[in-house]
Image 1 (cartoon, one colour):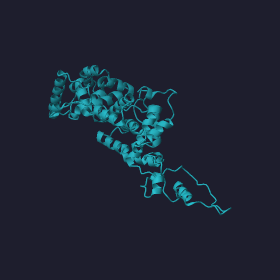
Image 2 (cartoon, one colour; image 1 turned 60 degrees about the vertical axis):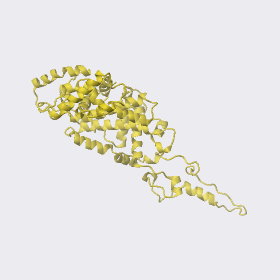
Image 3 (tube, helix red, strand yellow; image 1 turned 120 degrees about the vertical axis):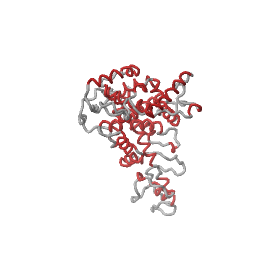
Image 4 (tube, helix red, strand yellow; image 1 turned 180 degrees about the vertical axis):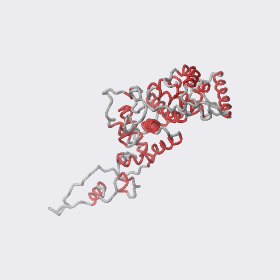
Length: 412
């Protein structure tokens, strides 16, 4: 992860041609490589880059509004339009090589003088077919229109590509730039694509500049609704034990207070609830875990990587880890329903620990078939596990490496 943020000259300006070819080759092409591994990495990076941008630039937007904006930017339709605007679809390889109908690009048939007609030149019917197959009529639309082939000649010259495959190739290209050009290089590639992930001006938002060398944003200030030093100190004392458990001490305690405050808790008049931080932390953890399994499991195929990612990044896993590190003890909430659900789940986790069942032994088996019945991980526990990640990220000056260092200790 640190190498991804490297500012040394060893960071390339663009991916090599081999990696670009991989990012432009779909699984349908039947080649020895395809874009699916890079697409998974690019998808996670795009999600967190857009989430950071929205969080920093839309201070008054609640989680619902932020999610709606993010969805509109990350949809397959939006990425498809980006690709078509830049003419990327015509470079995709989506069909298998047909050795029978394949023709050399721009092939021109040689003129042959027929026997018995000296000095007179004409083309044979076979040559005419070669010319016809190798030329694209002027009135025919460009290949990027992705029309469905109608004739044998069209099939030889065109390929039909689903919209989703075009969108996947955009994400794969993002993954290619991330692995070779680093974090900043991938952000600038997104900016070139026209995806809004960079601030118009580094000083366009209020508040101090982020102290992290990894951040291009001004650190957003947290809204303090009621400035009361005594109340803040009381909260800080309550949360000292939590900071010790996770191994991180907050410079601005308001971030932590907000990250642990449920919407039902009316006694916190210092900050808002955790929903905005949960929106940010969800994208951060998804990217960090995806980058880890991508770089460490080079022998796994894309399907196995996806299964592993889904097994590690879900509410059940996060909720159980949250209980093991005492997140539930520091949660500020006043909902009787959540009190009951959290209590049942905490007892279940303790029972599993007493039986020697460890979550890290097999991430695919969080609960057995017997345990699964009637036991549901409370969503609020997974939410605060994500919101605290967002809080650490902001408090550390948007230092993604430090955030991962704290969370890796809990996740491993």
